[in-house]
Image (cartoon, rainbow, N blue to C red; front, top):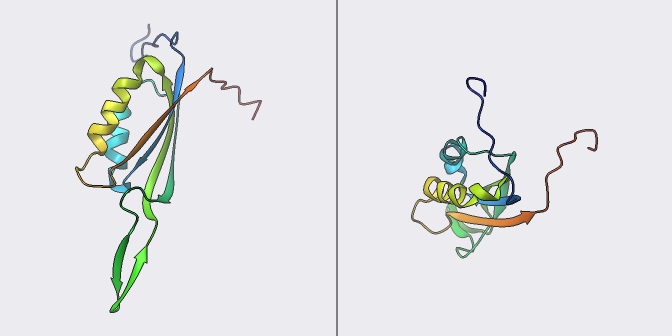
Length: 120
């Protein structure tokens, strides 16, 4: 193996697609926590939604109004199933604030990953 080259993990366990919803200000800590893993693909996008908190009330120029959808960041990543427990633990540690609305992690097994860009 050449200097600086990462060792490739065994992919016998397949891959997992993770959808992670977090607070926007926790994006950088989560990305930092993920940098040592063998992430095949990662996409970040802005999202809006709510969970148990169901939004909140804001006061603007003396009037109250309801904000139903809270700003969030949605990360979608594909990684080897053999690393997913550690990845989930890293995300939880980096994203957790201890308050309601910290986010969710959804996992789905994949049969395989095709990276042939000619297909796209």
